[in-house]
Length: 283
Image (cartoon, rainbow, N blue to C red; front, top):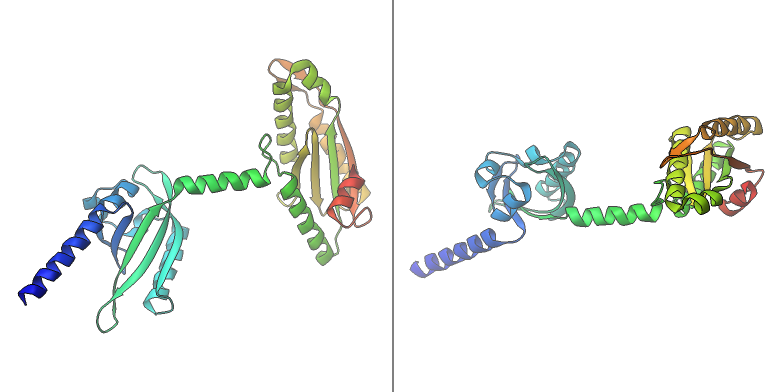
């Protein structure tokens, strides 16, 4: 008995050492969400002291949408549908900052199989999440203007084609470029040219609906995909609106610039039924 007690004590000491010194957050969590035991790493992640954590539930530091996902996973663990779960979720740190964590959860049961509590391993991945979001943004959005880039434009236009085929409704593609933009770059510098492109992009973005697409093709060339505007009269009316919006002078670094813009329009399906043809026709 003495040997068994010593082995048990040794095992408990090893667990306590591993629990307390782990670089990853570890917690024992009651089925109602109360923190039963937390390690120092989790306190560092959340910004709360151990005493503060033990008076709280995981729901208190989770965003509402993430609570639903966590609760659903725990229910699956309790009814035996899954043995473990892993999910990305957000915590609200003590200082109010929102951080991303990966939570791995396992359920502990008694000898009769009754659920007792969960063991959670929590790793902060905020920096990795931001890097992934930045890479995703760069893949689909123009770095200078924030408009959709060529990659995302092609995907969006393909979706517009599929939707038009389902609904039997036409749409239009506007190809826009700035008049004499090269002179702005040559005479005033690329910094002024870039600021001008940002103003143009903002005006275009504010002129279209959420269901439309505003993209920068490159240089001073922009594309608008206007879903539901499929007749020449409707497209001409929208073109006049764009011309009016763009006619307002822009002051960039002390230079007052008047924006001239040229617009070409193509219609689905009369002028093309695929990305390349519709863009080429509008050009």
